[in-house]
Image (spheres, rainbow, N blue to C red):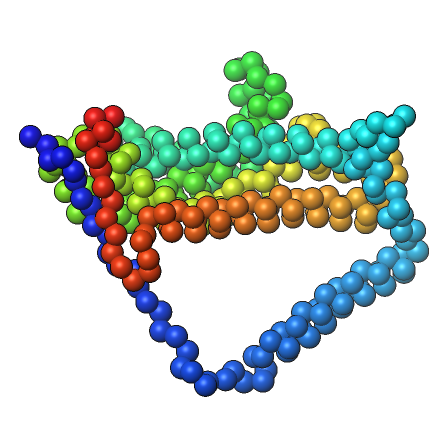
Length: 303
């Protein structure tokens, strides 16, 4: 008979020794030196850019950039080409993130399975996709896989990004799962939990905080790599920027604006992941330096 509750006790958090009171940093490591160095580097980069544009006799037209974001037509605000491209990029990236996580989790489980065929297929998939350029892969999906499956270029872009990034996500997920102590699995199996429930109720909740930081890097790369869909004529942010440059010859302004928009997406994604990680850790621990208990109730065991 199963016990009413299975208690899985986690190890206490480690303490990091603090700097002794009264100790001071050398002057070259002080805060004001760091600020001066930062201002100097940014100022130098700005000066080099402006000087290079001046030698090219480049005509800066920043005042025209807002109309490529939003424009007012007969009193109604309409999204400009860059915003429309941004929405397409977000749609592709959002769908690709979901498919990436599903494929990555499935591949990780196959890699750890007892099935020789499953491990062989997962390894073959990882080796082939990780060791070929994503540009070649998107052309294979577009000219071969797309016509066979009868899908359009939009889903070709989503699937290409997903299959490529899932190879990295799979290794992150597998590493996090294997980092959970084996004693947790053995104790859960001894209590009568099935392998599926052990994975869902015991292993994955403990592996999730471990996989969030590296998975964030994978998802940020996915957003950046989404620009590759411009090669198959999807009207994403990169494609719209390139079209605008062809019409206006505003290379500096458009590419800097496009880069800034990608930067906002990736920084926001990283900040959201950091917030989620902290929230998850706080929810799972009572306080720093104390052990905590994860309780699996009878209701959870019956699911």
